[in-house]
Length: 208
Length: 208
Length: 208
Image (cartoon, rainbow over all chains, first blue to last red; front, side, top):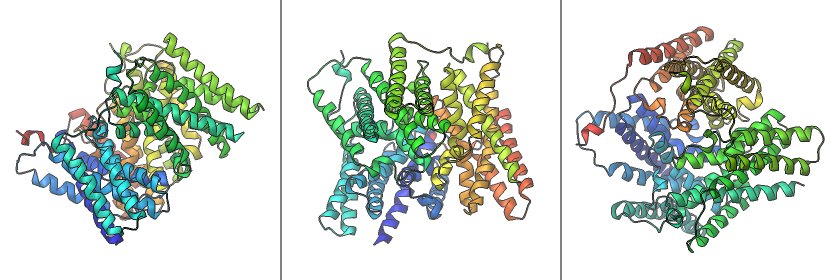
């Protein structure tokens, strides 16, 4: 079972590395800069999680496969782009949505595994899911996706709560993992496609 | 006695969460985004402090009250704003000033409590006091308050030195706590009100 | 031998603190703000490294000399500028280049010393070398140097690989240290002087 989680974790690492590499390409960075941005995006959230919990050395220091997956992703990305092709605008947020969904559930799972409470597990899912993307957007001087209104943090929090509650009600780990990931992903992808958003907390208009 | 500190710590958490929620409202974030920004502002500084010291899992993982205080603050903030009302421009820096003063002294206290030196205690007070606000301002793409000239880091450093020195000279913990907080707060509030600033270190004008 | 490394480490701390103070001067910060920016630049990368590895309390908490070097550097910097003088544009990137080279090799050395693998040592060198500068640039709302094309991450990665490989092939520690530092420094300084850059990974032009 934990092999499933490991597989999803490496998969999430690859899609977040891809989102970092795409962001790097939009800023015309050199190959080593691409590696740096892909890496912080892919392992940033999990590193913050592990440092806060005290699970040090953090996961990618203990297991070299994460760095290998990132290097391979960047290599493929750099090679593919040699043959010029259109990179549609939506690829970056979609890759980011997959990473968000996968890492949210994996972060929550790791917290529960360490005996932390359900509430903390949801927070750790959120940190793991949004941390890397926030660092990527800060470095690229973009407005962090989590700050925009299209249910970003919402998707992660619902995914984390879904996973924690499903387990608490006795659902099997594999099923809970799949359902929570699918919900978070669907919510986020729908939000991207139809520009859904929750009502904003808007102080600007109250100030005039 | 340490109950006093705990009370001030939760109070500082609430005012920093408020400052994060206000900043989120100015960026028209959705409710979950507000929670995220309020949380990183409220626990960001203390989390960095605990991670650097190695006091992990960090404080809010060990004690759920911090997250509960943040969620309650955000809830009150979201509900109050339903009835449109003017939010004066100065509310955000004033809430920030209270958090700065409270967290500076609490951060210094925690460091001393762990047997660290007075100099490190001042630094830990500074990190606890300014860390959350820096993260908030970075995420909102504002110039971090600590970068502006209105005695921001200064207030924190003086508060931290005041607390450490008062204790070293035998003042009671409660009195030292109160005096140091009041000094940092007064310095910062005066600076906001009268736009006080120390002479700037200005390389620009030397370059022509 | 480890005394050599300690000396270089304090030297790197001073040049990075200088680069932080220079950046602060360009933003007209007050003296305490200068101290804050000089400090996060000087110890930011090493602090992230130590927190990720779990070497806590981090190095500058255990050894007060780092903070003393930073305070002394800032003091000298503030005093010198009293006599107005031109500060040439290239001083900041050059100081940054020295810090980059020194901290890369020291970061790799510390990782190897803790029994971590060569690959992780290169990554730790990179984090130590570029971390502080990234935080400095983020706080000053500059495009982080690591995002620009002039072989920045490249210099650090080559320096880290050079050090690790030299040791693996039996070179003496002092010689490997010196050679790797010199290579990273030369690469970066050449890039600054002649605006060298690797071919960029450019997605923008592929999108039309």
